[in-house]
Image 1: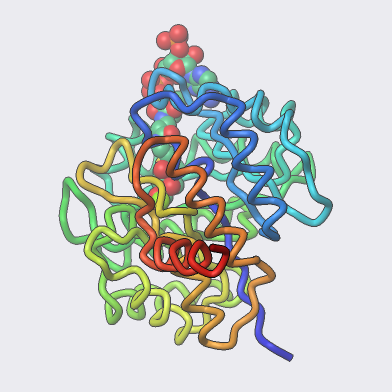
Image 2: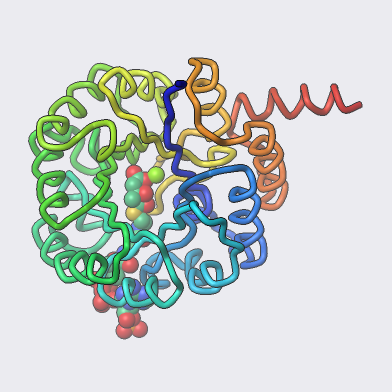
Length: 304
Ligand code: HMG
Ligand code: MG
């Protein structure tokens, strides 16, 4: 049987959160619905954070309650605190995401508290999420480098991963928020995390493509045994608290790579190419996906 890779499509949240112009709610809903139809088993659809911090995500409740859900697809939402969790529960999120950093400096800039304080803040959030029967994911920002402190020790990543697992996280994201990591480093970090977690089912690779390393990093992560990857249609994104970070690795590029490796994702690449072209037009910027642009041209030529 062909090996399956789970792709978590993060464009509607991690991608759009970084757009300066407010993307209207109807477009956000249409984006999630189109992604659902393309076959994703997990879509990060909204964020219940302070609208003062991330105004773009202020309409998360409307998005989550208006999307057309497909049974079997997990719709995830970010929850930084109890208030966020209550909103996510009311909006029927299937999975909530708590997010810590492996770098103290980034933790302060992103969620206004230290790493230890953030874990303490997540304790009741995690407990309530589990009690409500929700899946729980823990994201580790700046796992491969920090825009403020530079290098991040491997031990710091493992330490945060351990704390998130103790809170009951089903999945841990090793996130290269600013896209500086390289393949050998990815393997060092993931192998170390692999000492405390199952790499195939409990750990995901979340790579940004700032330095053009994301696809190489995915291949390196595959070698360690990781089978869950995050990506964003058209390469949408960045991070409002990580200056210079470009988008997440583009879903079209990741699918082209993985399908070429003979791996199964359950996602229709041509459909995603169409969605990438559509959302890029909606936000008035060219797609950041190389495979997406090439396939759109090719598909357009074939259709002509
Ligand atoms: P704070 O200012 O320290 O705390 O923010 P606060 O409790 O004083 O809250 C400030 C205001 O926000 C208050 O309103 C609260 O009521 C309100 P005011 O009294 O001033 O009118 N508030 C909320 N409103 C709605 N929903 C809530 C909520 N909580 C408070 N849940 C806080 C602390 C954590 C809230 C803030 O720092 C925050 O929301 N940060 C989120 C930042 C964020 O979303 N960053 C992007 C996500 S992380 C990421 O993208 C990286 C990742 O994708 C990995 C990767 O890409 O590599 C995960
Ligand atoms: Mg990201």
